[in-house]
Image (cartoon, one colour):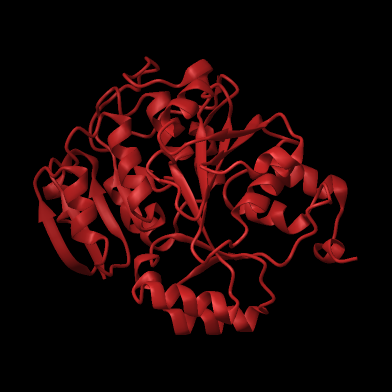
Length: 343
């Protein structure tokens, strides 16, 4: 069943032939939308962008993306110049928001056929070059504008800030951040920062930084000329400065039991999060059993990795799934097999 949150396009959305579980109409602060639906089960939310208060401020959309699973949200855009500008659309893609359209008729298609990064890559600004094509206008006659909007995108680069956070104790966020950074660096301009700890100092890499929870927003702003910033949040780092967050669980019995004893609703709270099993020895069947018992969805399953190796094919798979499509060429060039990680 689906949810509709509408405002300007209420009458158009009323014509959709879909199953509706809940419907809201009006203008709502993003915090209210998050609070209403964080623990509310639905298949897809069709969200009229004009129903979000101050929606032309991209920071408001970022807050939505941090707190909700955007793969379950179809964003119906309006015809304003800011929302249809290359920068605004590029930032949507950078946040992992791929299901957006100005065509109400396309909404029903997106429910069953959600976009991947490849479907919206033409809107993404990379290294100052805007791969942009105007969205088709079907409900009104609108010309797309290439003017800059009111938010910053330094040097034309669409920045992705990806947090990596342990959910079970010491689930490997620091090592995984380091390995992902090394692998991304072959095709992307990437740096990494560790929050409130300083274990990166032992890795002898000048593109690994240390910062604090308080200073993290300023650190990101001062390094916004990069394409990607990976943030090792360890166990307690704040997620609010990241526009994407990966949550790590090491699926050992002791660590899982500790997590549940600490918070019996831990998995319920992670229902819409990007959940990775790390240092995992689980088979595909084991993962399915884990999902059933925890009532959760695993985004990716990562085995134990040798941190001395420069390349892991399975991390290419993860990163390509996250939209880092340039790695597809490096994967074919290397010709590595999945189990080359084992010696």
